[in-house]
Every structure is written in structure tokens, then in C-alpha cells.
Length: 120
Length: 106
Image (tube, rainbow over all chains, first blue to last red; front, top):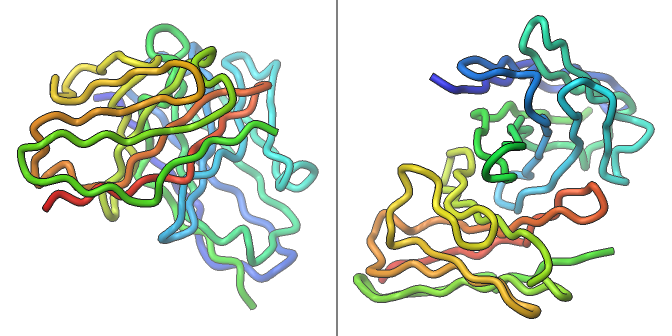
């Protein structure tokens, strides 16, 4: 079964760090761009970052540039998001999502999300 | 920067047709994707590249895209279609989502 499973969320103080992981299974991981999308409870979806299959290309939303780093380990079929200098406004559910690079070009597979709370 | 505009809410009577729009400057030149999100669940891709349905999505879901407006159409609306719907495009290597439309089935 094709699936993504996030982990690593939790409560952290402002200025702190957290690393999210997303374990992929059921598909050829290194063929797809992977993304992080976040959602404040009750609000809309907001794209955070993506990384291409061979890690040669990454991009970030302006509001996380310089603070967050996306990476992947294709040998472990795992996507990461290192989040530093966290702010209360980073509080959200973080989803990893696969961008199908072959057919749909959309985010066709999503994880269940992991909650990050930034609070003192 | 590019922006996508969606109505906050749309209501439709059971069995009727709902239309959810997504506005953007010359959005007709972009590939638009639509996602359905039910409370407490992750989003699900329901339309890709303007008017294509992934496997498992009912034929009642369709899409169109022209000019400055993309539209998601849900025919014969069912109670189970109640959800938030988001449009999404790529612009300058950045993914953009519309603000989302809450569909209520009456």
C-alpha cells in the first residue's frame, strides 16, 4: 500500500528546534518530489517546502527561508524537515505530500499529519 | 506574487450541482489541482491538471479551467461531499493553495 507517515511533532518553546520525519512506503521514493504542507487548525493549507528526487533542488516558502531545511534519505525512504528558530505562528499540523511527477503533477499522496505547537 | 481566490462557502441542495470557483490572473494557462478535505482528515486529490479524476474519485466530480477562473463541479451532490475544497497551482517553483471553500450539502 502506498502511504506516508509523519512523526516528530510535539510542543516546543519559541526559538527552539524540532525535526519532522516522513516515512514512505509502497512506491519508488526517489522518483518523486516530496513536499511539506502545513495547516493551522481551522485554517487553510499552506505549502512550506519541496525537494526533488535526487536532492539537487529545494525551495521554501518565504516565511520559513533560513529557518527550515528540507532533506531526504532515499536509502531509508524518508523525508525530513528540520525546523529551527521556531515561532508561535509556526504552530500547525504538518503534512508530508508526494507530488506525482509523472501523471497527475498534483499532491496525490498525503500523510496523516503531525502537530507542532510552539508555545512557552 | 500570484494569488488564488476562493469563496468562503458554497451551499447546495442534496442531489443538485455545486460549483466551486478558483480565481487567479490567467489561471487558464496553469495546471489546476483540486483537493477535498474532511474534518480531521488529510486532503485528497479529486481533480488534477484542470479536468482529470484520479482513480477512485466518482465521475460526479469534474473540473474546468479558462481565462481567470477554474471551476470544480460536483454533480448530484451527496451528504458525503460536505468538506473543504482547495484549488492549487504551481507558480515560480512555489505551490500555492486557494483559501478553501466550505461546501455545505442541505
